[in-house]
Length: 278
Image (cartoon, rainbow, N blue to C red; front, top):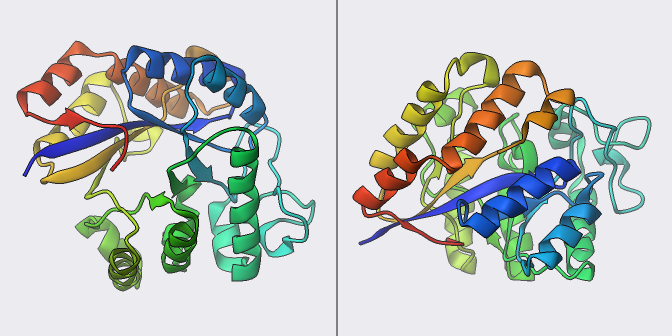
C-alpha cells in the first residue's frame, strides 16, 4: 500500500504576515494544506488572501485558547462562559477550557467557528484542534464528541490512528480514550490520518536547523502505509515581535524546511506522495 503525506501549515489567521507566507507556500506547492483560526485577529485577512489565490478549502483549526504575545481571542458563540476567563476571552492556557468546558458550550462554539468559515466562503473538509484542547492532552478527552461533530457536519478529523507510545504513557487514560475515539470514527466513517509527524520539541530544545530537519526526516522514514500528516507552523521573521525568541526561530526553520530541496528529494526517494487530505 502506498504512503501518502499531507503537508500542512497551521495557524492561518494569526497575523497578516503569516497569512501572506502560508498563501505563498500554497501557491508554490511547498505545502498541500493549511488550517484557519476563525477567532484570530487576522482571520478575515486570511480569507481575502485565500480567495484572491483561488483557494477556499482550509481546514477548521478549532480554537479555545489565546496566543501569547497577541491580543486575547474570544469565542464567536454567545453565552459560552465555561470556555472563557473572567474577561470573556479565551485563556492562554489550553488546559483551562479542557478542564472547565461544558459539552453544550463546546458544541455551540464548534458550530459558530464552522459557520463563520462557511459564511466567509470557505469550504473546510476537516477539523483539528489548536493546542490539542479536544484530544485530552491535559487529562480530559473530548475526542469522541469531536468525532460525533465531524460526522454530523461531514468533516474529517485530525486525530492519528496510531498514538505515539511516549504520549500514551505521559497522559493518564489517554490511550484508552484515543482507542475509543478511533473506533467511533471508523463506525461513523470519519476519516483520520494514520500518524502525525512534526518537530515535536519545544523551541528552546531545537538548537539548529539541521536538528529540526533530521528529526522530521527520521519520522518520515518510518511512515506507515496510508495517509499521514506533517504539521508545521511556518512564520516569517516578523513573527518575532510576538513570539518568544526560541519559538520564532523554530517556526522560521520550519518555513526553511518547506522550501528545502533536501526535504523534498527525501520524499521523492521514499516514494511518498504529497496529497491535500487524508
